[in-house]
Image 1 (cartoon, one colour):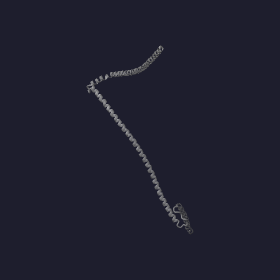
Image 2 (cartoon, helix red, strand yellow):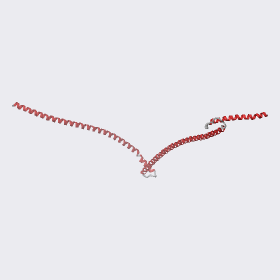
Image 3 (spheres, helix red, strand yellow):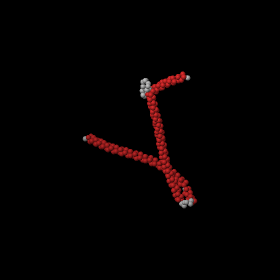
Image 4 (cartoon, helix red, strand yellow):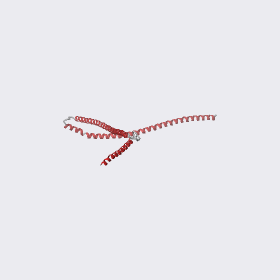
Length: 245
């Protein structure tokens, strides 16, 4: 009985130990996870703070450079102010010796008016110059276009003159050809008439009406024959006279 009771106590003790171990293990794991989470957050926070510190250092450097530039600008302005302090004194002297101004502001106003007038005149002159340049460009374009048109007109006139000369020569050739045709026709007609007169008593075969060259040959042969006959007649007429003498 005691062994059984001891075994039960040991078993219960073992169960309680396992239960305690599991609870402690679970608690330890939770604590470890929580610690990891806190450590991660801490690392991220440290990284952010480090980045922020770096950015602030950069901004501080930029601000130092800007401050340096502003200080330099301040010194330059101070030097300019110190250099320009002579002008109010000079202006007071001008007012004292001038009969036109009684107060410095009047001289300043007059200078402002003159400056504005100068700017207005400069602007007006620029506008006039621009207008003159535009007019000059337009005139140049017009002259170029006019020269092109004149050149085209000259070319057209030269071509027309060439065509007219060619037409005139052609007309002269045509007129000359017409005149020569008329003369040739007259010659052919006269030759035909003369051929017909000379061949009335001839028994030779007739030559065609359009064969003018052959007709001339026949006429020439006829005249040679006629001349021979005439020479014979003159010889006969000359012979009795010689006998009588």
